[in-house]
Length: 97
Image (cartoon, rainbow, N blue to C red; front, side):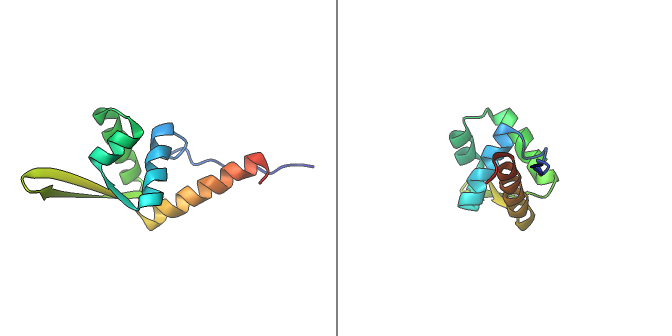
């Protein structure tokens, strides 16, 4: 029996980016501080990975103010949801589910 493996999306095949996408898939939106706390990432690394996800259209970014404090909110896009679901399906192909 020959198994067919689906290609894993290299953008999502990173521990931190996959963590971010998992959070946003479940929550639909979260601010920078929340994502940082949940992923335990450094601010610099988190910023870089969020930019990568934003640049490919998997997440959207909204910068606002909460009082006088800047607040950045990230949302998963429909393209991001599809990419995440496709990634999960690809993983399942590797374990035969």
